Amino acid sequence: MNKQSKNQLNACRVNHDKKRGVCGEVGRYLHCTMVMHACFITKYEVLSRKKIGKRAYLNDYDSKGLMYGLNRLFESEVEISRIRVGKKQSFETLINEEALLLAKYLRNERASWNPRIPTLT
Image (cartoon, rainbow, N blue to C red; front, side):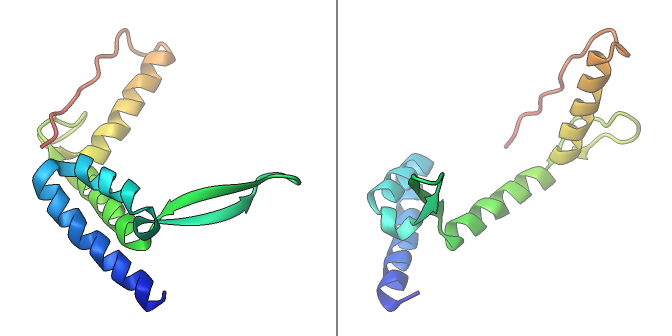
């Protein structure tokens, strides 16, 4: 990464923090679309023998932040009791348990399926 790209990336990071305080993630998205070259990496890919497509990827800094946020979400605790033991569980465990209950319902092993939906904070 050359010096100009690093400066643009740092400017993008600073403006993300400013926008996040003013208007939240919408401001971040709008800023990213205005400064596409700093927030996204564009690559040309061969789609077929005669077609070449242009694709935009999130840069390393923003993709690491996105992955960190998703990981925190899946590891967060929810106040819904587990199927077997416990009063709390992680969000990831809740998703797995709901998938299991839905599968049992679809195989007619259960009479009904009522999804347990947590409130995320």
